[in-house]
Image 1: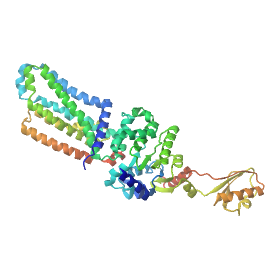
Image 2: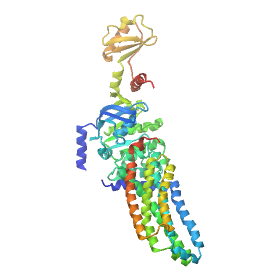
Image 3: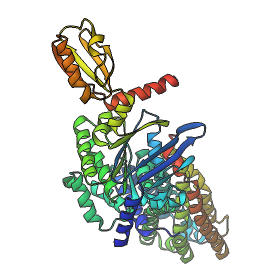
Image 4: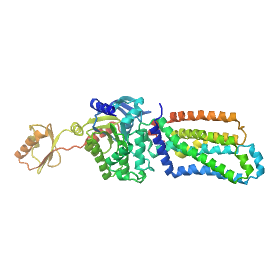
Length: 326
Length: 240
């Protein structure tokens, strides 16, 4: 056991948790996803975003050894993604599918006991207690899963995924179909896992969820469209800008804005608003404020533009739609 | 590679717990044996002592071997397609379990209640005949070799029937269709036992050994065929 622990620690020091190179999956003529490459480090929460049919779930199933890839290669939890490694990879990871897939006639405890045995978990009773505590379900152990709300079923599914203390946890749309309160509960649970150092591969439609929970995100639309930290993606996709609101429009804005340090250009935004393209907001803002005051303008606000991950996502997906309008 | 006992046992325990709480399965397991029990008992009780002479030359008890053929069909046929429709197959396949372990667990879970039911019904039948049939009829009906045949062939027939059910279930998208097709595929086995029961096929030791060997071979083959038919990828991705 000690040997295994040090082997795991070694793996975590020396290699990424997931390493994917040119991976693809086809079903006959239909391409589910193609030429996908990325790395996920141990302890990272990695968001996998994309529209319906983009190939997110198929990617998770492929990395989870449920489907065989059609092309490319990957390593998951230190093992090459090959049929002969299927059992060992599945021992090291856990997948929580979009639908909880619980045995509804069985109790929460019976569901977890079955999976604890399938994962050969030592001391299953103790482990079940611990995961139920982690998802705040200790008092429901004898309840039949069929009597639980959708949110509680999702928590049971998460508890089931945690049973084996996986090196990599795949969460496929964990908040799909949940009301905001139940979704917030799941977010808190994921946040807790993240703080505990669990490597999480999270597919989601909810961009605010990805923005809140993920260290890095990738956007998939059959092929990988982009990958990076949410803040970096915003910077890559949108130029930095200062949003200016004043009481009256400037008579000659060009004379006010041109030549200011770190200001690359401007355009009007509404009657008395301006958007300035800047290379560095911290340098540009003070000089812009001074220039406006010198020009006699009554300044209401000067603020950096705020682009969300949703803006990045929609821009990339819209580009795809324009390129391939089906 | 040898199946891992703990994983197989987990599937068996889970399946048995599910059977216990699934009224459709309980009815399916209970009704058929009752039909096989009540109707022949009524007939046997009505037989006069003079019927004992022709009965000595028939093997009517073997007709009850239809129970271990027909009872497990429902269980086997539900096993894979039922999980698939519940959405529970994907989480199970996401664990380290191998397909041969999963299928073995499901087969054992179907085997245990099927054999218990078949033996219990047979025991009740024999006891009722001993207690309530006319003495000559009882002794003509209950003969040592037939009791032995019942004991030996019940598990073999049940195991074969289960593999047929599981193999059909792995290719099916509807549990009722799977049960019907499995039932159809099990009918030749029932036909053989019936032909032996009514002396069309002579009930000799040689025939018994031949049929026993054939069944053993078929049971082994059934596991391999069911494992080969079990296509993880199709079961997870296909909607039909």
